Image (cartoon, one colour):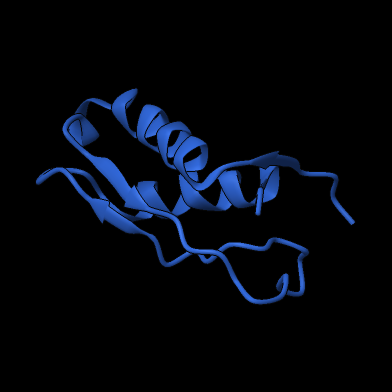
Length: 79
């Protein structure tokens, strides 16, 4: 199992927002909330990939999904 850093929902949201902001087409995008799961999924992540996000008008959704997947590999929600 992957060893993940424990972070608050706010910290995870800030990390995803910062990664989005690095991409010109995604500037203006931000994460509103990250929601925990009752139990970790099969990969061991304990928060949902269905996050509330304000996506910039020109930001391609596949970029958002890639960043979320990277975050889910790196971080678990500190409860």
